[in-house]
Amino acid sequence: MDALVVCANPTVRAYLEVALEMEGYRTTSFTETGEALQYLKEHTPDLIVLDEESKGELSAMDLAWRIKRVRRLKHVPVVVLTPTNDERTRIAAKLARVDRLITKPLKGGEFRAFARQTREVDPRD
Image 1 (spheres, rainbow, N blue to C red):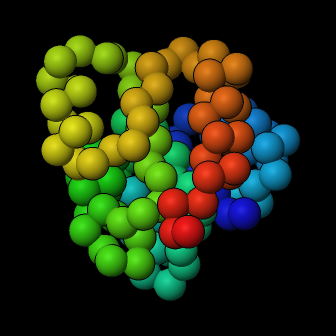
Image 2: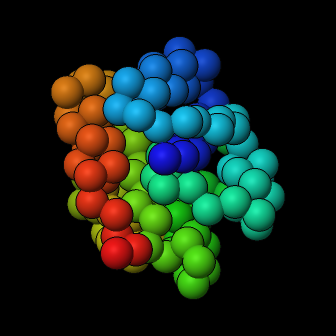
Image 3: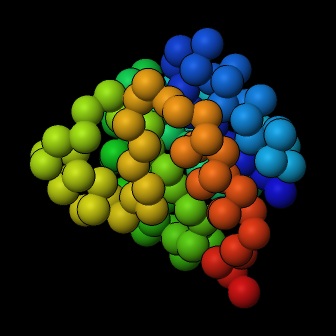
C-alpha cells in the first residue's frame, strides 16, 4: 500500500511517515502541493495526507478538490490535517470531498486508527 504525504513541516512530515509505515504503507512525501500534483499525474496512491499548512501554488483543499475530480483518483481517501476545525474549514473540506479532517496537534492514536481503517477497506472493491 502506498501513501502520499504533503507537508512542509519536517517534524510533522517525519511523524506522518513513521506512523504510516507502522501501518504498512510505503510513503512518498513532498513539501509543496505542486510537486504532489505532478506526482499524481503518474501515480495512484492508496491514501493521501495533506497538511493544510503545506506550501505551494495550491492550498491543501484545492489539491483535494482536484484529486477528487480525477476518475482514477476519486476513490483514494484524502485526509487533511488542519490547525483549525471551525465551520469554514469543515465546509471547505466538504466541498473538496475530503474524507477526513484531523485537527493538529496530531494525536497518534487518531491518525494511526484512520490509516489502519483505510488500509483495511479498499474503496476500489
